Length: 210
Image (cartoon, rainbow, N blue to C red):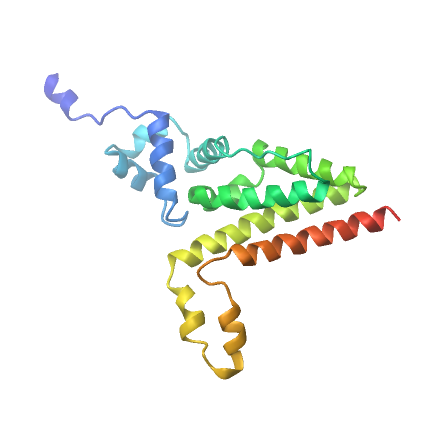
């Protein structure tokens, strides 16, 4: 009996599974698999299926676990548009701190935490006079802007593409634009993106209040 027990894989907890899954997902979703996760944990796939019935169920749990650590807080003491601006700045920062969540954008889109954030965003817009249905669409758009920008930024930093702006596009025709692109530091580009979104929302609110 003792010899048989020695051959059995160690018991794996849900916490261990989620923690290791988040580590592996930092390299993206494409190469992620239950077998790869089991190997990293020193166990077999069936040990993971004892906790999660499918890969999708496991990914749902990873999303919930990661989102639980991200605080989507809105500053109600600021003007409505500044509150949204501050949220966008914070959301981008926290997204970059959780690259495993960026790999799960499709999975995260309809989780309760994300939908709650959309509701809060839409209520702020409604307080400015934007119609309810339009505020929902705008809230979804803001979430997409944050996630898409953060995802591209994270992928860009992982590759060798950043140097191409300074090395491959030195042709005189494109010199000005290539030297103006923020390849290494996206902060200025993000500030411009946020300002454009806020200006659009303010214009929409002003139009509704006429």
